[in-house]
Length: 215
Image (tube, rainbow, N blue to C red; front, side):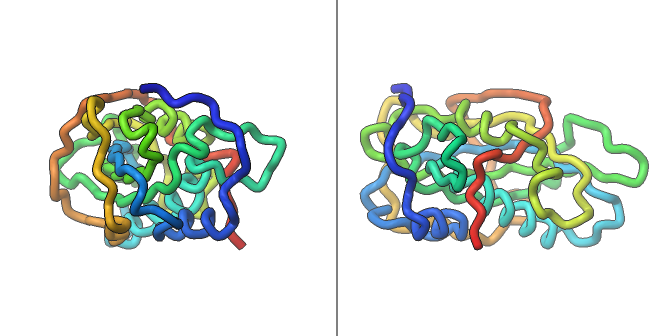
């Protein structure tokens, strides 16, 4: 199934704040769970130190500024909402560095590149449980450079999207979860994703224009 353009009111500020914080939204138990992997190459200065603080920062800023937009949160009525609005009701990310994988780009002298997988857990309406939102997620990540838009630590130089993968069975709906996955970033790789859909790009990873800014 393909999602269609959605009209209607934006989610409440309470709901948008919950999404930005990576916590449950009202009636989340009634939603279907979809899982996507956004593979990115992250270039940082070589003397940035431990990876864990960088991973936490990357995860937190993507959660806070990109995920609410997927659910239709916007503080600018002049901007067109995504077609995922009112379909994706919540989205939670978990960043995982792939220590044993190489980047698709070569880092300049003084910089180091790390391959990351951003695991994205999307809670969607049961009526669109079999829809594929990979292209919509990709478009959201590619709107404008994240390193220019997100308040990341100063060690980040660039973030490049490699691919967006869907880990969903397109023929049957996902099961509704009882709660959100843990938000603690995983520093060492723990799983190999299996994919049903894959979109590739070498364009620089981007931020949402119609992001939801919490006060």
